[in-house]
Image 1 (cartoon, rainbow, N blue to C red):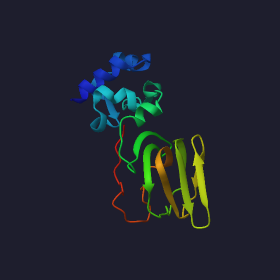
Image 2 (tube, rainbow, N blue to C red; image 1 turned 180 degrees about the vertical axis):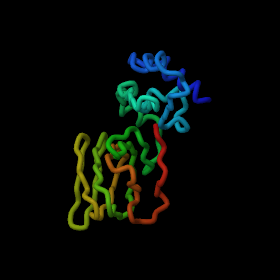
Image 3 (spheres, one colour; image 1 turned 90 degrees about the vertical axis):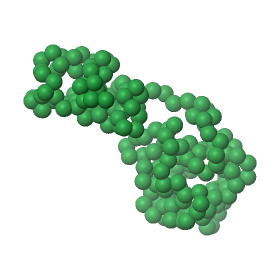
Length: 188
């Protein structure tokens, strides 16, 4: 898709009159459009998932079309989209953090994260998190924050559904080597 097509899509879908006013006042050759995530999501989903930024070079005017991608997320619906265990899925981002959903079953590997704190919020089931000096038991609706550098081992005797909040750089196995290590996560 050409830059002109992207520009036309922007103008067509804009809920603010600011972009329309720019189009009327300035020739296209003076406008540079920077669209984040185009290659990942495609134009049809662009407005649902990303903030669009229009930089107008001629006037140094920056306009942010920010509320176009604000939508609710149905956690139960997202969890119904996958069945594999220990394979987190990204369902949101904020302030450099990923919001992830995962299904857990069995014991995970002992590990720690050298730079990242990790929040486990139990959506359904009972999650045990073994620490070197004690065992934590989390029921549905409860969460715990595991600070960076604290060794831990999640255990799910029955399937558990969790939401995780952690920096985007966090690798699920932390410092440990394991076949369940996931460096690239699917977005759903």
